[in-house]
Image (tube, rainbow, N blue to C red; front, side, top):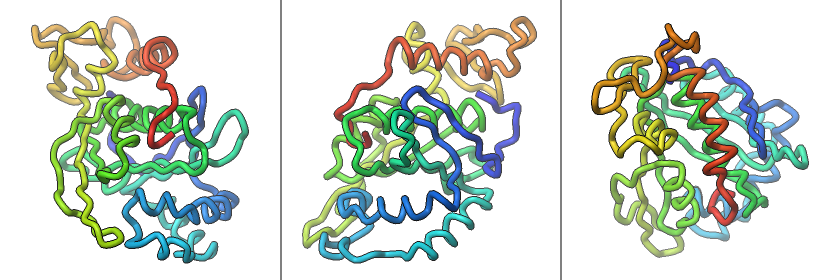
Length: 258
């Protein structure tokens, strides 16, 4: 956890993974995103349309999207990345941290993938995004909402460590049918427990910025004064995360977000 660094969503770094790379949106990406957003199924799963027929109509022009992404790129309350498939170099989706609440060290998360399914790309993109949220930005909470007709995406979020916190009944009216929405969230303590499977459940708590303790009061990660690793939950955790991703829980395919 990099809570020694001020939360700053104007920093929009490139995030590199084995399967995908997350990078800020460029002007050249906008026509590709415009074409991808024409996928009706994406609009359905996001709850952005009321009928499938409505999804057949273009919601934005390329010029309008260029203006939207330019505004988002300069904003201090959201980070928008395109998801690049490392095997092909193609832009295949978008990952977003938005609605930043500085006082409560929290934000919301959304992700979408177009065409590419069952390759684990969306799962890795979600993990890279959560690593940035907790390890680099020092957030305490990230939340999302997923609709009842998207169980595959919920499965991915469960696997990452998101916890189901409640159901918003009949939150969406789609083609004459009411659809429930599920509220899910992951805390910094959840994230670090997932990284340290040898620790008992709920054993790690964030007691203050950069300070992670086990239930017995012993630091869960090496002291930076001894290791020279920076924040107690910073570089050490980043290295540990990479090992975990490679050895223990690199997700397989079959998930709603890819």
